[in-house]
Length: 398
Image 1 (cartoon, one colour):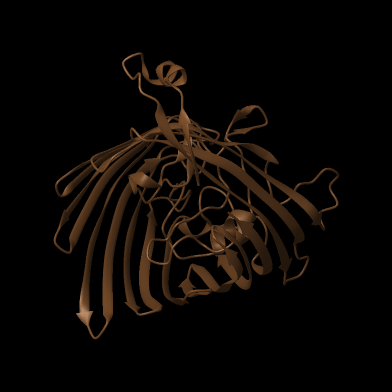
Image 2: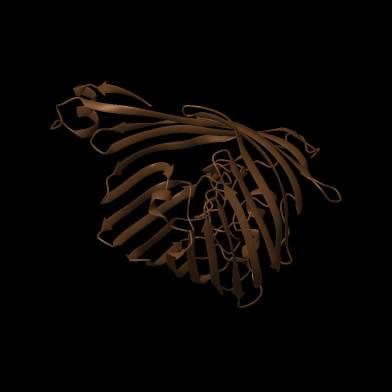
């Protein structure tokens, strides 16, 4: 990061004539250049090499305000799709990923423009969106709200205890505006709001989400009401336990057929951590009244790789109607190595093993490389890329 002084003239232009003193600005550049090779292992397999790049900078002012600007791109260097001009698996080749103004203190966080909304800590919307977000902290309470006009879908998926899914950001890109129109995953305008209440080791987080127009043929309204309850504690001998229970009621015509559909989600997850190891198990059920449609989620905090590698997009392949699935997972993370493993069984099945190794690092620059295998299959919906993928990747970032 670099610092310089912003003169009083520019200071006045941005923040009013009352701020006559010069501002100190910290410039925080970021970016990456990565490549991913996906080789399908099945009959008529998909095979491609994708190149992804991102670059930008955050301008951090000393009065808690910041500005940001960045761009993202993705290109298919090789694929076995013989369609002329195919950029598979990427929907778009690039976009302005970040263009925002943000205010950040311990008690109040606010962002407007194109920005990363993770600070709101909402399970079902994450990564970069176009809109506005706010979070207010007061003692043991967090109050938050999100307005989303569009989103940047680039495979980013944050799972909580295990962190972001490895390499999925190299496997997809759908811009805020696709073909001159709003991102087809969003549809209308999305408004979400909720509360996080923390008391000792307990946390409960109710929310409501409304999408004014689903991107389906019938273009109905989507309404979701739900909550997450969690308990995190040390259970002795270096073990830490996190128990999460999620529930959601959804009303919306996600199948694109006449008539609104009601559905719901029940999901329990138990995660244990011991030193560098993490492991656990869970079960979830997506209950659909008429065996159609799906739970419509823009993002989620599952540990699955089936969405990011085998079927990028919205909704997720593992949240289709009437899906009952159990899973066990494990992983480790040390200074240079991270490993994620998953076995899921039921209507959604997944066998995944993905590893990441930090090959080189100098200050804030680093190069990571890795490989993995992901098998994902849903008895309800087909994957957009394939069921079985062997991946190899490398990523330089700063």
